[in-house]
Length: 103
Image (cartoon, rainbow, N blue to C red; front, side):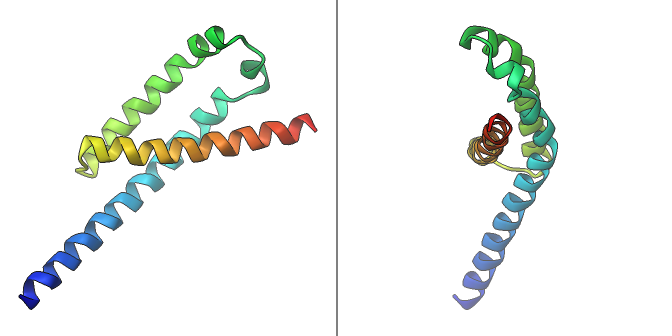
């Protein structure tokens, strides 16, 4: 029983480390892409035009997510959730930068 708990703790730690590394690598690779999406020029577009303009960049983010999920051997659903968190954080950061530029 003690061995099982130690193994479980090791697997849990391994999973946490893998998730952290996935998020770190995704963040590194997605920062420029997200910054390129949320520019003053793009934000002045109509919603439909903004979506069309940024579609390629969102497809690139999806491709990166899938590559990293495979590289880190993560479940695709978990990778999607982690990616969503990272992309949301980066989007918020980009929007804050835009607001500061407007001030």
